[in-house]
Amino acid sequence: MRQKVLAGNWKMYKTHSEARAFLDQFIPLIAGRDPKRTVILCPPFTTLETLCAAAGDHFDVGAQNLHWEPQGAYTGEISAPMLLEMGIRHAIIGHSERRQYFSETDESVNKRLRAAQHQGITPILCVGEGLTEREDNETDAWICRQLDHGLEDANLENLIIAYEPIWAIGTGKTCEAPEANRVIAMIRTHLGASNTPILYGGSVKPGNIDELMTQPEIDGVLVGGASLEAESFARIVNYK
Ligand code: 13P
Image: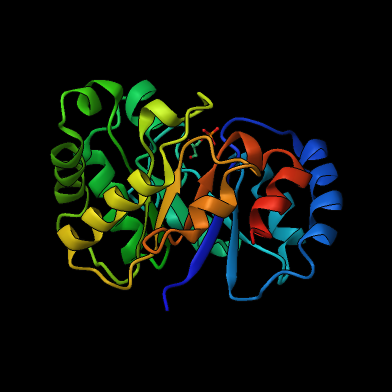
């Protein structure tokens, strides 16, 4: 059976003290969860250490990005060895906000992804169509292109994929569960990677998590806004 993954992407939210307050509330709420569910919290770089110190067996910590070089003159970037020394084993790569606001291309996404894998970090590769592609019936072709470029020369074993339709991110519009299931099945077939966990992301909330997780192809979720509140993210982790 494929791994179930419940991941939170905190984006550019929470200071150190806000992160501490979240953890004090969150950890007891997930204490009784099924140990087969992997929980990953991806905070901003400034709170990685705060989360690593509290993680224990409760959750894993992931970064929101990493550079392809192990070190160098790249102001504002961080590298895999920096994360590894803190015990971090996951990193989100190619989030649509990085592509949209920080000029990430399929080529830079691929460089970051291969560097992560090469150095022992599991990338969480984000793919997903915008509203235009969806309305033009280009969804599947768009995603296959992102996969083909993003995963060039990559290893399909040490990998998590997140299908995040851009029109559903932060908008309150969730992709209907059967449609998310269909796209994720399409991704799995396209890659021929039957063991790769594939997550859904985009307005996941306590109110829709149970239905999403009943879908056979959806192995978990990547959650933005609802991962910022301990009670709502705990409810997502403890889905029924
Ligand atoms: P929301 O859950 O806020 O829609 O964000 C999804 C996302 O971008 C996770 O990476």
